[in-house]
Length: 115
Length: 110
Image 1 (cartoon, each protein chain N blue to C red):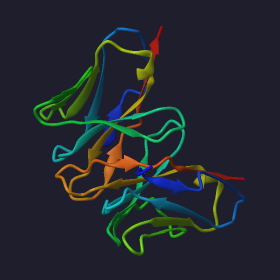
Image 2: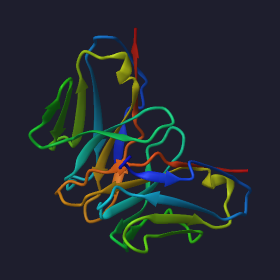
Image 3: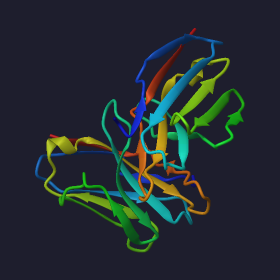
Image 4: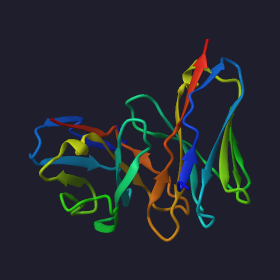
C-alpha cells in the first residue's frame, strides 16, 4: 500500500502521560500536514512541513505539542502531559507540492483517548 | 462570520435524487478549493478540486462563485453509497493553512 500510513491507529493514555504518533507520507511527497478532528467538526490545522522545515504552526498548538520531520520523510507528533481535551482523531496528510493547488491525501488517523 | 461555513444537514434524499450543497468562505483572496468525502470514523478522501470554470466528474459537479464567495457540489442520481459527510476546504491566503468546514451530512435512503 503506497498511501499515507499512521501509527498507532488507536492510543489510550492516562492524563499527564506523553504520547507520540508517527506519520509516513506518500513517497516523495514533500508537503506534510497534521490536523486534529473532534466529533462533528472538520479537521483543524495543526502544523505544516515542507521537506524537513516546519513552516507553519497553529496558535491552537500549545507548548505541549511538538512535531518533527527530521529527514523530510516521516513525521512525529508528540503531546506532553496529555489532558482530556486532547482526546481526538489526529490526522496526517501529504501532498506532492508540484501543482498550483495542494491536493492532500490523508492517512487513516490516530485516535487518542485520554482518560 | 466563520471562515468556511457549511450547512451541517443531515440532508435525507431518496435514491436517484439530485442534491446540492453550498459552502461559503469569508476571504475573497482564497484561491484553492476542494470537496472531500468522509465516511463515519474514516479519514477524509478527496472528491474533487474546484476550478474557476467549474468541473464535473461523473455524477458530481463542482462550481465556484467568486462574486458571492461560495462553492457548490451537485450530486446527480444519488446512490446509497453516496451517504457520507462532505467537507469543503479553502486555503487561507498568505499562509500554508487549509480551513475545513464542519461538513454536510448526506443520507441517501432506499
